[in-house]
Image (cartoon, rainbow, N blue to C red; front, side, top):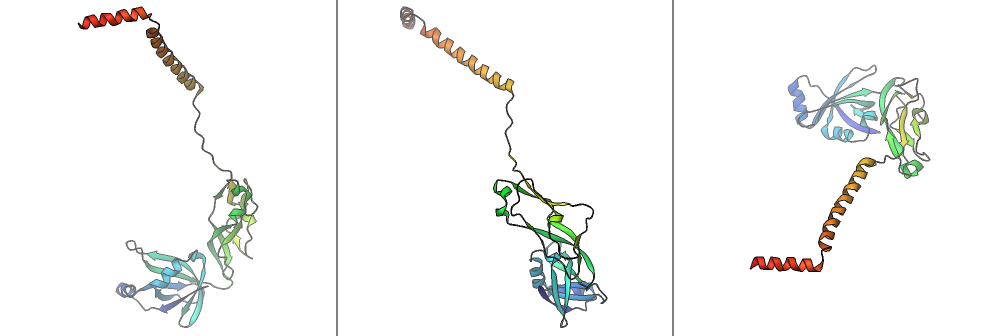
Length: 238
């Protein structure tokens, strides 16, 4: 579990908040449960490390505040529109016995052991995240889908995923699809219409015939006539 060192802040004006940010800290708030809301801050470096972790919005983290640890979930992070730097965050306390709705990411494993994918099939992912209603003390970090043995045409539905105890999807009343192993898509070039193909063939035949006629016309003249023509052209030149 991620643990972050947080500090209570006593900022009341926009100028004080900006000064806090200029010193490398990000203001935030912790809320939820029976405790009052607390204004806190953490370093920009620690917040960025949290953001860079996979699935950070669904991961339970622990913050150390005045020597006491609290389990929280990151509910929102605001970013500067120009610099894209984090400028504010909201953390929600995990209250035992409570329930929370979260989008949990889906992870696919054993792709190489799927006969359908080996034969050129495609994994068509319908849902990369599933919205679940979870007990605060039993939040899954991810939903694992094992592709071993799955062939082309297989549909992976929510009922085929082992959910933790008391964790239920928010969509009720239907067994919705998470992914499918689909057949490969082959793009074929359109065939030429039969009439066009016949037209091209007949044009080629006519061209060949015309060339042959011209050749045979010159070649069929007797040698005497050819000689007379040559003599005539010579005398004309003189």
